[in-house]
Length: 202
Image (cartoon, rainbow, N blue to C red; front, side, top):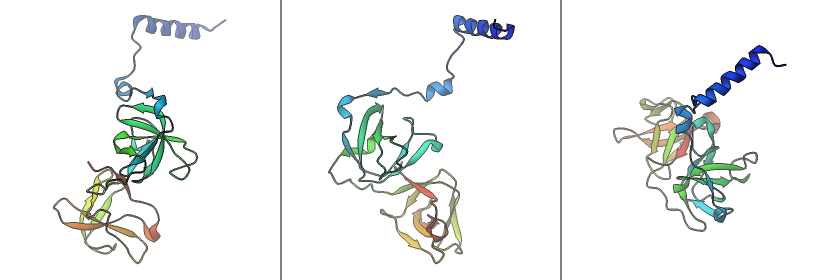
């Protein structure tokens, strides 16, 4: 025999369903996207016309669900699963990870395979940590500006102008708010780690 507590819980659940007071929270509903499958697209070849970030879901966020980044010119195969403005692609071990077979990207960066991608006019990055903009590509040079986590960083040239300092840091020249230029450390000492991620320019 079920306990009185279990019976009370069951009747409460039935009451909720019968009154219609059980509903999806607005936050969850806002993250829901319509997903469809188009068999004609399965295994179709597409090429990226610019660098783009790959996520494990069709909402392309939050940042904790980012799998990695694919560079311009990379060829991918479609899975056939699509969502408005999104496409799911197969990821080979040469792209990102052998343990993540598929991922979602912004469909606007896809073009037909075999073409030469048109380079974007700017090279943009997302700051993955707080960054100090320095007057020269060394850790001892004066600070001229800074970026917070999540800020968009715009390189002064495309492809970016970069230099490696004596401690092995890779520095990138950027354009700051007043139109002048400065340098950020793109990596840590000895070229380890990465402080920025390539993104589509806003």
